[in-house]
Image 1 (cartoon, rainbow, N blue to C red):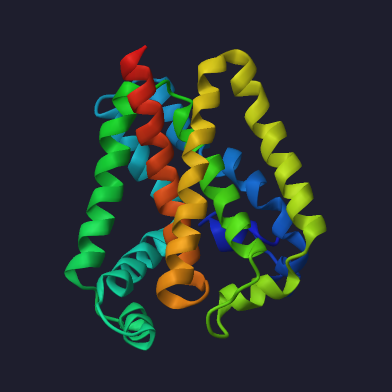
Image 2 (image 1 turned 135 degrees about the horizontal axis):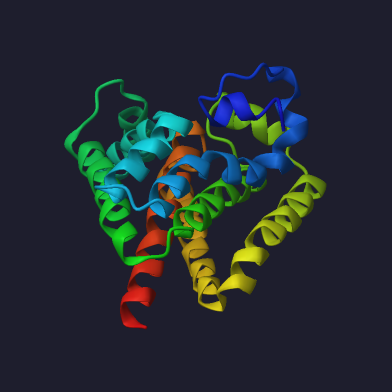
Length: 231
């Protein structure tokens, strides 16, 4: 886990990039760390806690995945052949589709948080990290970037271990409040995003993984907000 933490967060710890392939199973373990500060902000009910919590989250994890979402959305919205979509996704300039996707992801998170318990952002971040693991487990890389590099080391064993860790990390919250189990529905955003990536790009790269992570987190919070608003 020590080696994967610097890649998925901005926490200043030393890690060996060459060993990340063997620690993909530990991706769900990053969630309790990356969500600690946002959960604390919400628990203390600070003024503008929903905004501060989202800022605290991105202060911890950085903006790499959010940037991936922007690139992914630009590629998705391009009409035409797959090559054109891939070219748009890899374009260094961010288009209106990317800006809209980022704005909506932030909007959903900020405005969902006041409607849910303080620990919901932990569940959303846990789903987000597990969604990345599911994306890697497809082993259908697009290009030869980081996504392809990580997929080379992905195995069924790592997926099984990661799934068990995900369940163990989710269980305490579910026991504390069974309604939290509804957050599992948020995971459905992961296969949907994976399917869209396959359909439009033919595979998954780092941008796709970032998009999968961001949409799954925002989608989970949206699901939880709707449920808690109804009960």
